[in-house]
Length: 205
Image 1 (cartoon, rainbow, N blue to C red):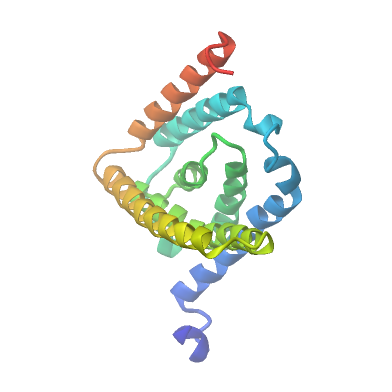
Image 2 (cartoon, rainbow, N blue to C red):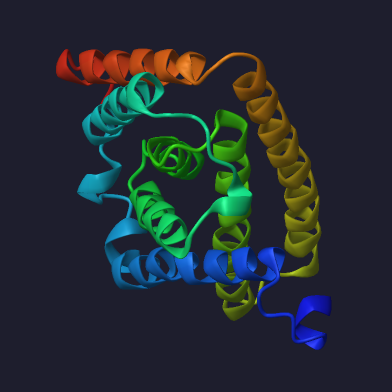
């Protein structure tokens, strides 16, 4: 805000903030357009085989970026095109099994960002998207006249979820700084294979 008040429109932080807001538009539009199908219990997108295959696909894509990408760039030299591409990748998170952090992290790695910088980019891009999703849910609860007891439980849940999210992001950045994305590749790959095998053999319905 200080950069805007001083009319320093070339300020790197202001430029990055503007691009992140613009990059949030794709998932906001997709969320509104697909809400009717995404929020139904019997949606085909929520089927366990879909989740399993989504995990496998994301594991393969992340593995490819780990092997092929040049991890040299930082968030400070990100361009508008970078932000929009990572923003488009964020739309994939609407499909269960394609996590928001996983899709944006993979896209940022593919664009050549350092591992810890890719995690930072993913975190920054997630702030407006998560905030919008939260506000939408709060509005839905307001429309059904949630009582004070319900709001108090929700408030506790929001605090716990926020602390857990920041702890997870901190741990993610530390792992990426010291190691690589391979632990996440293995985790998603194993989870996806287990889900596909379990649903194929009717172990899970």
